[in-house]
Length: 124
Image 1: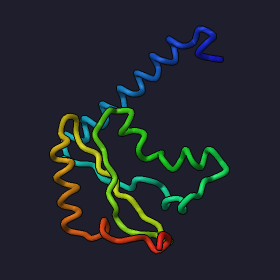
Image 2: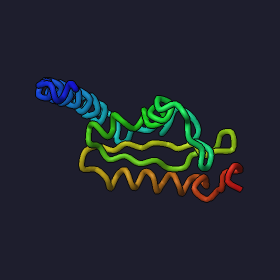
Image 3: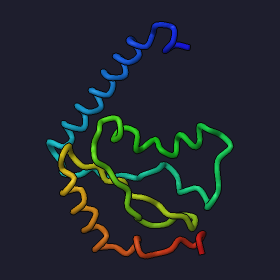
Image 4: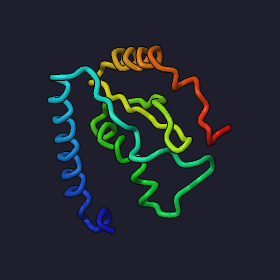
């Protein structure tokens, strides 16, 4: 209703301002680091075929990847272990137009670990 009631421009402009703030924060961070790493999700993966009945729970499973997407940054998730027999992802975020470095870091991580070759206990 808000978008159809003439509020579209105001909400769009506000969203663009927030997006710019997020982008500016990442730019400042990349003045000091090459890649930002953290968990991909606040919890382990859902079980095979499992869905949460609560849409908020489903939404929150992506909460750590939203800022990267809003800022338009390259990001990826690589296998980084298991918890409760389910995979855990390591999110890697690269600077604007620096996909090669991001892919290199991910490749080196996979050379140093074997998480990407293992099958989760829950999937056996």
